[in-house]
Image (cartoon, rainbow, N blue to C red; front, side, top):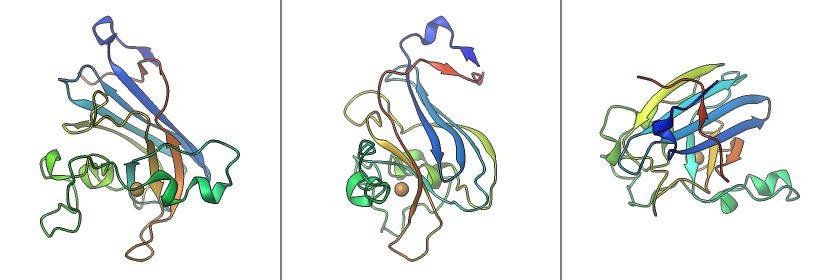
Length: 177
Ligand SMILES: [Cu+2]
């Protein structure tokens, strides 16, 4: 781990620490200023080929004390963070990476950057043009969800969740130059 350089002092950083159902690791987000791109780092182990999509959802994880099932319910976390109203039902909505990021829901990380399906451990870095950590459309205060694969068209069970809360130190493993 290396502390971020001085010119990143005003960076906004959020780390989702994933520690549920055996999954260990973190998904971190760093944006140097409202005018910069966001760096997304996905570092996860023990996925056991059991998961697929991952997203930023609208609301944070309910506090401890709520039952596990209610903490993970879609009613509590809401849908994908999508302040611009991208229409996932549209035939033009991209099904995988390769389109410009404004075509996707802000929170649809796996469509933008690729699914976790079939993986056990991942260490991936992405640059995202539409994943703000500043302003009204920010992902700060929301949640990250890793899903089991689609078992039906309308059911995507949650497998691991974490809030994107609080003041966090701008510490990342390495900066991509
Ligand atoms: Cu989701």
